[in-house]
Image 1: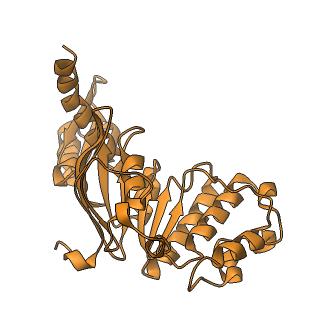
Image 2 (image 1 turned 135 degrees about the vertical axis):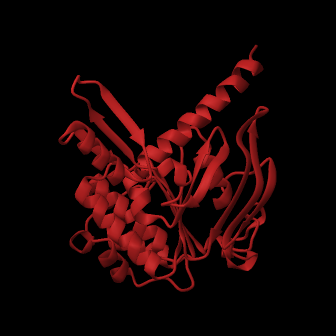
Length: 298
């Protein structure tokens, strides 16, 4: 059921951003409900970062309506910005202060900030609280970025490629942190190239390509039912490879065993993952965009 306007943290209609007459964002409609985690997926240059920067109030738009926490970001005041938490792709912190000093400084900007030591514990930096940020590892500095973003108790948290450069253990620790924020009711808008991360954290998601939102829905339903039909693959006695998409894979395997008198060689039953669905959506979008490009430059 579609959320009502008052239940939305983000509402976008007809969003467009042009550079020199070329649309980087081309007519996006998007809703993000309060309390949900929404992921934006798409190739580099697809329009994700431009869209998010408009929502954050850092970039102007060429056309469209944008409402974030009940305010148009283009005319937002400082009080509105204090309700946001933002983790950019790369940190801009100088690193001359210790973790605790930097967090205490940022906490002073907010009317109801979190306890500094509680935030340090939440991001797993207790042992590094008195260490200068410049001396931390890349993953630890990323944790500082998150700590700075959540110190003000944001209603809406923007995470732009938050775990780039993390090792697998650090990434999973970060996921647990985000799941804790989600449980507190924080609305989260995430961009990531890690499809496993999207599947783990997001309630819903959208795929952007060529500046357009080509798919949106529950994270387990993106692309529609057809995109998630299982695939049965096998080799016959002559070594030829076969593949069949079917909603009844067990039935197909049973028939194959009966026909061949035993289990087929290299038998696989594959249920398309979010990565498979994403790649198919982007591939189809690229194919449909190609004729337009050829016509434009003909």
